[in-house]
Length: 163
Image: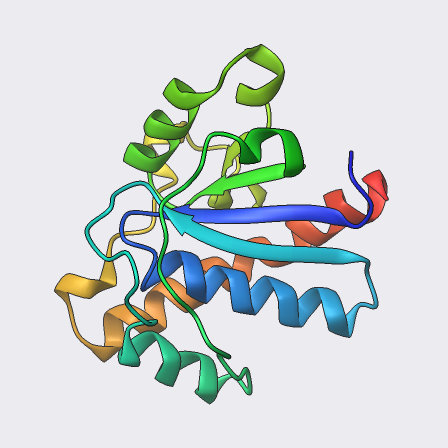
């Protein structure tokens, strides 16, 4: 484990779900006064260099969270060493990350974000995903934020326990 506790959230392009989760988790950790650093990445190179989707930024603003500068990037397998917890936003991200893991210890760091949501923790991994809101409208971004929010207390409890 590193000090601070380091979390990375991962989705497809790193412009919608993973930056939303990054900023929401960082905000909640700061409010809880936990020594936690959060960043995000994507599993694809489709959006490299792009900013956060404006719809995601708007949802964060509605929750009082300012999305500071964000530049989409692809997950680097070297980060298995420097991150304590790797959170996949959907099952294809989970599968891609576990396939990239260099060993069992690295793979054990990968979890579905919603596995920390008491309403979803009992579900099989393939049912814990958060649908990509990019294909939808503002309501889809609100729903993604709600699903992310429900998992945050469980994620912070783990960070607190491992600190």
